[in-house]
Amino acid sequence: MEFFIWLLILLVAAVGLTAVARRLNLPYPSLIALGGTALAFVPNAPEFALDPQLTLALFVAPVLLDSAYDTSLRDLKRNWVPVLSLVVIAVGITTAAVAWLVHFMMPGISWAAAIALGAIVAPPDAAAASAVLRRLHLPHRMVVILEGESLLNDATALLVYRIAVGVAMGVP
Image 1 (cartoon, one colour):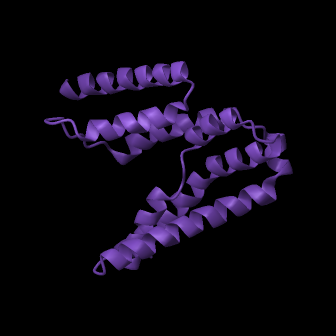
Image 2: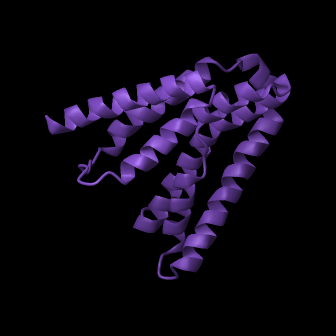
């Protein structure tokens, strides 16, 4: 029951931060990120252990679905080369940079584990990108490319992550 109460508190806090962001004319993901950071410093806060499959279904899938619903398939097809290039290159470079830094700072960690960690942090949030890009009044083509990249990079990062974890675990 305590888990449910804390989940409701977090949900109400997220809605409240979203309302404050809208009132201050700020992108809501920035305030939610600050709220999550502040929550990390709350003394005696309970620790939650969520099932990864449940987390994916409850949090990641709805955000991606919302971003996908707002994306124009026609515009995405028209700009598929730059979108795909950004998806592969941006996730690849970020994954490699994080993996190198982790391996450099912790030489005992395997490259596969370092790459898996890099793949976890590589993709930016699709909802955050959309919220920020809407306020910048960029050219339509640039917005389509950046929103398409932020939508599809999760799939690339998940693929890299799955392969890296398989290699780290010794799965053929």
